[in-house]
Length: 207
Picture: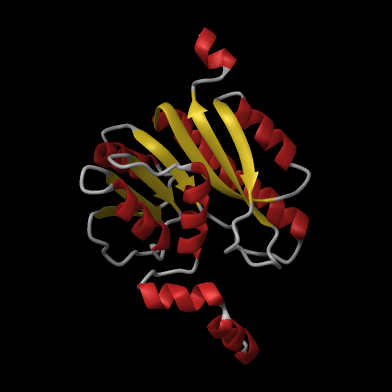
């Protein structure tokens, strides 16, 4: 990591605010801002967080679901314990990991969220395609686990494959919105996609 990068990070408002409030990541504020706008994390909800390390989103979710809610994080990397949160270390594509997740959640979730990002190659078309693959992975889990009227939140790198992914979401959710929270860096091409009302589309209602 370059010295300039470290200096810029220390000057970053959300990095400093995360330190002050004991959040593990500045990304916590992205989720806070998304939730303030779209109300996706609700008291008593069951929340699944994919790509959860180091745990910034888990902290925010646990605060908002309260003692009657449940928060489960999954990541390839270890996550230091967080009060009120259960974590699984492993690949969500693994059947063993999925089985463990189902056991912890009782087979259902009200919100599936993913801040997963591909390893950046430097070739944007490749990074975009890998980002869409991660979004599709989160959608696949959501389709298997979401309760009626459930929500899905994913991070996506915008590109030529975005339209097809959004179209797929609209087959399953009543509303699909793109949103760039203030806490996202201005240099980032990331966008968050918020899908609400699982099974409440015309197709879902008629089925």
